[in-house]
Image (cartoon, rainbow, N blue to C red; front, side, top):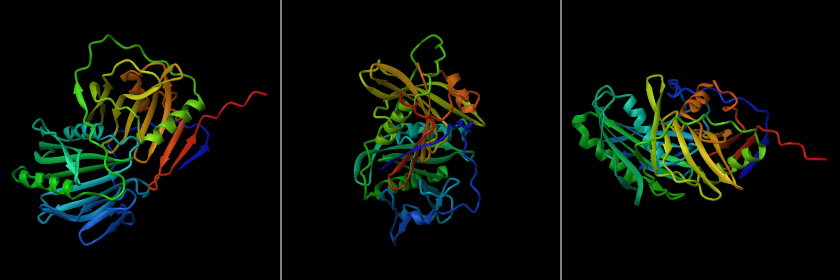
Length: 363
């Protein structure tokens, strides 16, 4: 269900990439899970996980964020000797896409590791008896201890499921068995998972310097159109498979990629993602959505976060990397002003708040 609200315009605050550390007394979010002797079930999405997988067993649940509203959750597993840790995340980003989540996850893992960090394998695998729905990635040399690590990503409606397992390199086989156990043991009692959507990273096409895009005048109709399109699909109908790394922006100790889609010219009445800049490893990103509608081509900037999407400015061309950075840093308040906000709920309902006042009807 959609609810429409009208609010005064406000500015998009500057973003920092790494998430703030959670306080030690953070909520557990236990009210969003149904426990049994063998499983933990996330009620809102009907997704359940086994209490034990390989060498690890369920330890506790965690709720992330300043408000415990059930949109950012995790189960923590540990081995008896605490050398191996596994985490099963279930969260609701503005754009649930397994391929982009995998690219962003690797960028943050690489930033936390030394030169020995390397990718071992990245197959598309089954989860919970559904073939080809998860992207699994195995790494060596993760973190300061050069540990073995595995990750898996899959999307279920508007929800993302992310599995992370880490342990000593000497116990790589155990790490991989735990990952397999969690993927095999997951159950989908509500919506079925979508087919995996792997992203192919290629070299950017040779091109001269791009001209800065021009910010278009605010339009209440277009802001609402973009908000409804995002809500109705859980993300853009078209996320291209082939992307290139246009640049890497510094955010503290992180070097985060700005991706540009390698696509053909737009067709009739299309909406597809053409730029993606990672902000966090839990769904935070800026997305530029190409909108070709009613014989007009424009590029809408969307700020995705956990549980929320903000529709920002629209441009006559894809914003350059420098313009994207200006919105992120807050030095372009006009481009970063929110035109509409979509607030997601665990029930599947959403509120759309419009920050651009519609023009008064002609007398």
